[in-house]
Image (tube, rainbow, N blue to C red; front, side, top):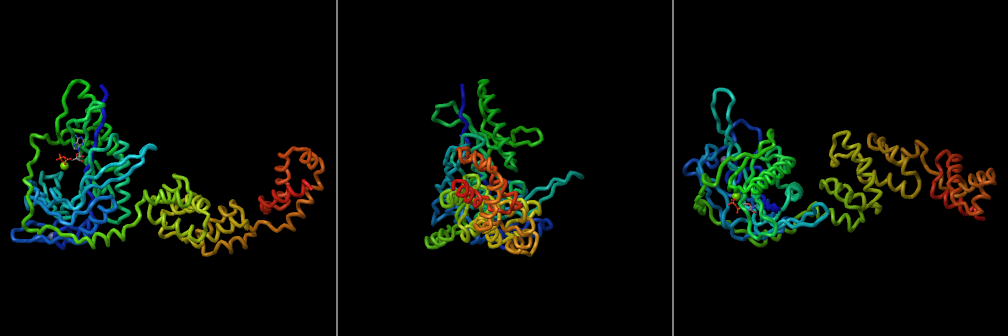
Length: 476
Ligand code: ADP
Ligand code: MG
Ligand code: ZN
């Protein structure tokens, strides 16, 4: 029997607010344990939570970018469980009425388009951190992270392979980073992902029993863990066994998943609306105002670069890999409408220099203006593309402009017709045999003549002009 894989993803994105979700404590990482706390996030009796408007704003902007509808009334609920890093004994989350619903992300996976639906995205607070010391057997609790705002983004079970999961996650990460609502760093834990995986016989309409994977902290982990789990479940089912509904942990060292807890031990969270928080009422005008400020997402921008600027998909992908790079490119083509020339030069020369210096494009010493000045000289034939590439490192390093560098180095191409015609005549006169060959139909001899003229000009003749003038001279 062959099986189809079914995967749905739960992603927790830590929102980049300065303060926590329900109190004024800072969210900055790296402070001494328990110094970023107050009665609210410590869960002391009598303290009252107050919602962070900025976190709500980030949730709305994310929801809109992910094609969600935003609920104008949504409700915070208590999700109960006991753990030492959760002093209140419950987490404030959203349950039946989340802030964002019914969105989607469109993907392109191995040349095929694919829509992954997002059933909900809700706001919730993070828990603290248990630290198990190696020596002495003690454990400690650090509550600095307690109450940090998270947006949990949940998909429908729409993915069918590890590749689709990775594509979805990358696209989501790019969107979050573009929107400036999350750092999007899986290794640092501010973007966490939990895939739910089940198999079913090909053709079956009903879903099989799912397993949830945890402890995944890189894109590579995601792919490896999902692929491992698909193999494991396939083997169990092929051998006539049953899949148990459980949570499994990915073990990087072993490259395996192992049971963490089974459904029998699963929680009954006893959700109910938090009586300390009023239902959140979001004005339509605010949603529309935020919709108006949304930036174009990377994928949409990539498509636009392909259509508007006629770039190949590859170029458009590289140029939209960061907002700053895409901005840089667009500010070049606004001044100089030769997108492919600009794109080639950015991807080749500029990125090479930036990467070597470990610099971001934001701090590029070559501004779009200065790059365009150089490329215009290529375009109008003043210098060759080769010369432009040669002087680029100096343009990058120094204070001199392209025009100054070209003049100093005498790189101007000879495009002056009079001067070129003179050289051409000389070459033609010296090679009567080749002239005969050309005139009797051997077009390839033209290359010989171009070479001779380039040599005479010490490489400075404008090859296009030379071609043009040679043809004229030879056929007359
Ligand atoms: P739970 O209550 O166990 O968290 P949910 O219904 O909230 O389950 O779903 C959690 C995630 O699991 C969602 O992304 C959903 O799409 C996915 N999911 C649900 N059922 C399945 C299934 N049978 N196989 C794979 N993924 C599933
Ligand atoms: Mg769940
Ligand atoms: Zn606090």
